[in-house]
Image 1 (cartoon, helix red, strand yellow):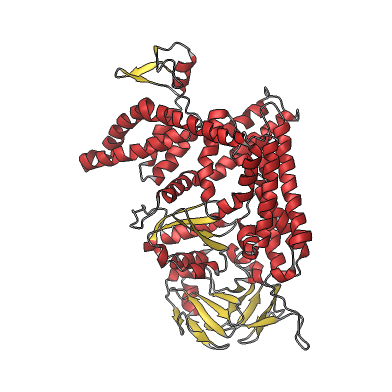
Image 2 (cartoon, helix red, strand yellow):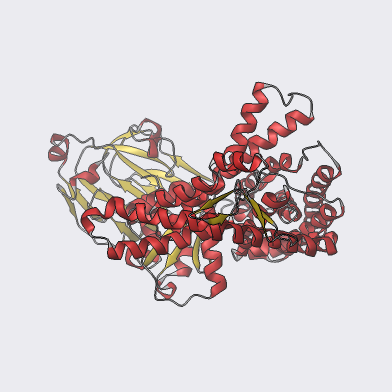
Length: 631
């Protein structure tokens, strides 16, 4: 596991496995639902290497990781067994609004990656069509358009899956409900144009009836791309499934429960839930559009200016179903269009900080934050740079508000749930081509970016606002501080890139070097604290007095020995001095068991330092200089 230590530390500090009710992730965050948030060590997590910050919002305990959150999630889920575990109800009292946000994020989060990907493909297909590169009759365009449409058109099936997981219902029951709602035959029946009769004639909900079920009229709606009907139907279906589980004997429960559940919920969804939910969605869409049209400029300023605040507290999830519903009802959305410039404003501010600051550590944080921001992922910028310094965050909100106002003036609409950042630009191309609204999107994000940059570069930045880590050297102080890590083993020195373990050889776990041991002893390479000692004894983590984290990993896959042939001489939490004996291991027995003993010695938080310089020696003894960490 690439992030095994981080995953274990996160699980430990959220209160342990038993405190985790459920776990999901989005683009940058691990989203825990904890049984008791007071048991979590929030401050420890905030200051942990590999964690950007912690946000408690919407009934969720959100651990912000960054762009590599999917890999961390896999390790956390595997170690905690959360993927296989069923969520149990928490005793914690959660408000109705928090429950709504938690439900929406749980249903939509798993779809975001593919939803953005297919939206990007459809957006680029529209771009190629507008530029004349493709025609709408060409096979290339039709295939690209099919890929772009596939998820959104069949959205009820995908949301049937995610809703079922969220509501603890059988996932294939949820998918079956969704598949029925978009069943092609129903569309062909309504296309015939020959209704049996009409219900609610002369009202706003006048509805032709094309078929009946047991004599009950069925109002056929178009559920392609819809959101509300499938979520409500799956929720009710879960309750029906629970009822049948209680009364059907276990010996026939496997097939009779889905049989009975589908026979009840599907007609109920088509006859009642679907039409009512569709009408509710139409009213919701009309209501939001009415409010927006009162003043598109003010709406754009408010949405663009406060969007990043909504993101911090997880409140942005409340806008997602509204936007998708608008696209279903009207074919476009104005809500998310207004916030398109916010990420560019944040990126412009961070770019200005990158160019102005003399703080080496801040520069190193700003580079990846700018790159992520260009592609629409701003959490590293918000939590790592602008929010802790307050003024840069406020300036980014101002720039985002101005961009949102311009987008409102230009009447920009989003036609696709496409990608983030620059990949989101094609989402604003109208079916008729690049119109005034598209130009408004381009102008809005450009102004947001440039204004954010200018406000920060010329008016908002002072180095004394930034917490300086590189103080001016006093007379006699070295210009660059360093810490020397001595060798914990005796043996042949091997380049880390030659280690037969990709996690170490690629430097993913940190910079360092490896040793082929000549003796089965490990000594402390620094003065510090033993921060981790694996139960298997094969790996030791030490934090030096200056904060350098050192990992000594004896052998490859030796964790499988489960501690056999390893004899620790210290325990986790002990304070150690350079040269203290930490562990002994039986080299012959380990090799006889089929394991290699090449031992990486790495600085696991090497990203915090200017460089880690390896020794040039081919062979090394105990306590000789092995690594030099440039602080």
